[in-house]
Image (cartoon, rainbow, N blue to C red; front, side):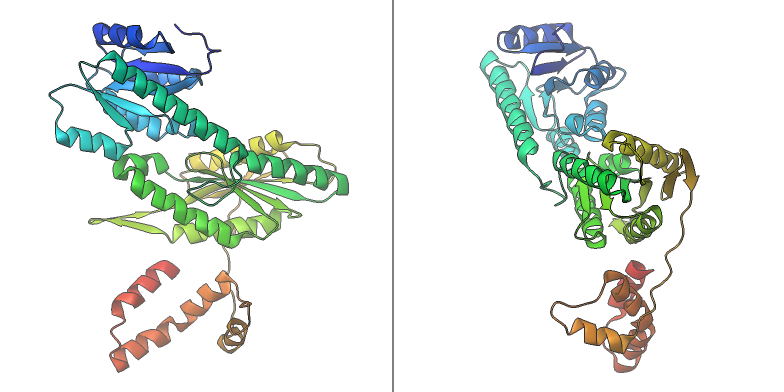
Length: 375
């Protein structure tokens, strides 16, 4: 077994000892190799060995097959595991349909049995180099490419500055952890492309709701965090509730099925005199988030004075004047919030419906869509 200290390792997963030995004999000239007898064995290795940089796996295996292993990897909350290159080892009998299925599930590449030494080593080297380049870029990048939010490294750096400022000036600061409910199930059932569309849309809701001084980040596949400087628990709860309500209006229609997307959130606040660091704050927020998930999701839990307290105050509909809003919209830039726009649209829907009916405007489908998005 390869040493944990190795910088890059290859994991070969196959129930055939002959195949494992053949692959290891080819690869161990250039890489450290781990072997797994099935998907369950491989998953256990991945949980404890963070040096694995590429996975070669067979599809047909007992206990947990290659499909199940790929599903676990791509659905993992650990972003390092979820982004691992996974190369499927296929036999001559593998159908085109099977290849398409695993590609849809997130397989990176294929290699056929019997494999030759050059192909196997070149695939391993190429994907290990690619993974190391991605890691290096992530360390210096401040923005997550898919979501437009901060990277984990950028979030940590900004959070440390904000905590130091809050402690020095005795001001409040709030940290929030969000998770998309049941995201792994959505990923497995509908594939990478749909999952990424959901992540991008949810992230846009976070960006729209946050203030200029706030920092939002993607910490994992479907894990998000929000940093709210100079914000107490009450103010932060208002912002978080607004985000969660926006997300809860998001519906995914695939065929005849309609899926409701929802968020769970945990909130904690650094108060005057509190010496808690970022790890401490995230731990408290995670504790509150875990309760929200355990209670079925679609909840906001606030962590207060060492206890987890469930409170989800509903946001009242914003009172708006249509005349006043028309004046605000005419300004450059427009001085109108998303909440005001949503409330105005709700207020105008009966008028739009009546106009459509009387004037034959052909807006019936648009009106139904608006009602679904705004309810």
